[in-house]
Image 1: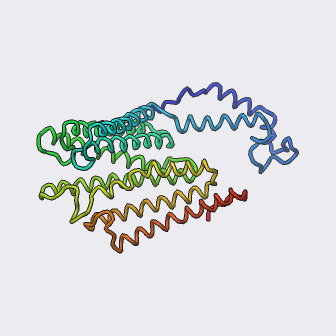
Image 2: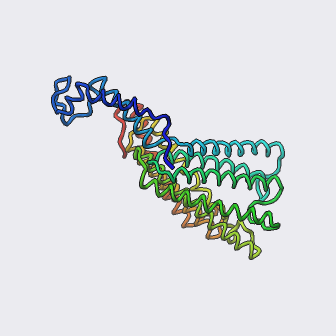
Image 3: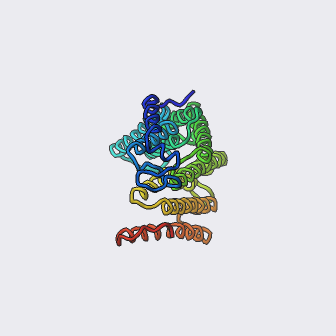
Length: 357
């Protein structure tokens, strides 16, 4: 299966490229002679600043790069539609909860279709966007479509169980419930494998600004870590169920869901942070440093949650190892905050923007 290009104008591009190569100033640049401003053409910036012909080349080549290297194929469009549908399902169940009332805690509550719909929806949207940043491979489209369908089925089964008034997880009370749980576990394993594939691909076939590359790679690694932690806590919960212990608790007060949720949405937060800094006009060095430090902070917060949970302590029942990790996360956040404040101050005083710290 080949990547489908969106109405790629091969003939028009060929004609424009031929006209540019035949232009006077393009020949001057190629021969190393002086440009229109009388300065040597060799060892200069591209002649995009010299003539309208070469400016046309500056318009053609980005179009070629966007459409050839990063085409928006059918798999991406399908994933965007399914992701939006999942988000809409989560929002819909918010209104259902407001009308029906009841607690959001417990194994049977409207919290599950709400959170799973919103979380799975934005994850599918993010994976579709990430796929568009990678060089095209046919298997990517297949895996992305399978990933989106798997999460739609998973959220659909969880929502179905809620409407039936039964628990969706750790529920083997009837053959139907046991089969639903088995399907959910298989879908989670498949989705984790797809995330692992795209994580590996991001280290091989990802192009873009340095800050965006750090954001995508770090976000995917943390998302994969979240999925692996989720599989571990499911295994622990199954063991707890066999022993007659609470399935969502480890030790005396450890909350098994705590470390699963913290790194899950870094794949949305980090690229949004990079985009926001870019919109503010920060230079690439500052953006990369800020995104990198925030990535480290999220990793340390994940470590904090693991320490709290597997030591049998509640979320905010602090002890000295957790204090040390929290201090490290705070220090990791202080540096980019200070750099951003310096940049804002330089813009406010109309000084040259800082480049790092």
